[in-house]
Image (cartoon, rainbow, N blue to C red):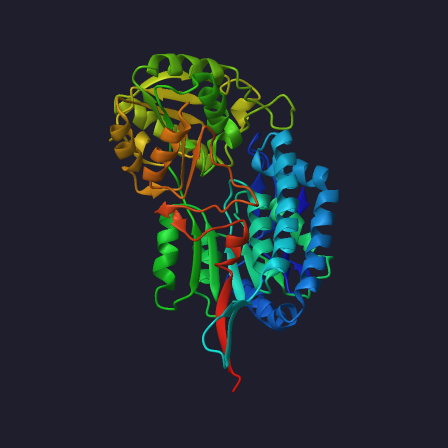
Length: 479
């Protein structure tokens, strides 16, 4: 069994208490590693290390920062196989998906490093005898709290955007599946980063996370996770006026109009349900299908779900692995129970997980509910699992109203052969990202972030630098 260390002040160390906690393989339930159980004293050390590193890192030229980051991206690229295998072991991603995640991670690092060089100050025309301009500056020490659904990608993204413009950071990866984050720490430790630029510590959100959020040395918080946790962070920082960036939950409408290409919609909707075992904030949360094609859509959708291969994530034939942890497996199972209790029709559910060897892991059989009503729990709350929820609608006005009848507003998709109609409806949907005849997918070049309880701010693209920089106006009287 392997042990891992955290990264504080440029050194790989144990928790100050010497305590550790176990990490489990979600496909087997077996303990595979132990990681440091950090506490408040470790947060203090990490925050202080980041504070000391800030004047060193922020005063480097943008070219120097970019070059160091590109070296880190290159090392990550060289270790795709190792990192992907660890992600599969620790999180349960099918191996082919893990490889894609690692590739996306180093590409995001490259993108952020290169784009930071394009950020320019803006000259403000005022009067002929004044030179006024606005420039971007780093905020200081940032706290980056990442989710368990896409571990490495989430850490790489937040670190890249934070440090590219001169910030330093303290990262708290999830306790559930933090091994690739700690392996990434080993890569950072041997890079050209000044000691303390990036610190990575592990421990419970209830202690390490909460203390990190309230720590006086932290100037900005970037968090990805549930809306409930996001609200707690907003409440905790209310008295300190810290900068906050939140990427939270979603219950995303997938709207299939009467004239849609049903095969294309099903061909995209099915993978949207089972990819990463449904543990994706941008996954289709509610399928709204026009009544005239409802039965045909449901029939084809179930046929597509029946072809999904659930199994050992290390097997390249596997398309869907386990849930990330036993607790969430039970949560998703409870939602299936709620659906049945409220009268939704469970038209299909896979049945292979009760047999060896899948019965030892945290697997959930993918499921499809139809005849779902708007007020049902499974239609309103984020399930975050491989459960399709299909509702029926009769007209465009009705489906727009139902799609917007949600506390969430992360993303949506609209399926129609009439592009103009799709664009018109997209303008009416209350979501941060709406795609026509496709599903929204985060990409380095495209801003990502939601409305309402789905978050504050945007990640990715040049806009992703908005939340991790502060703007200063400088004016000079030339007369």
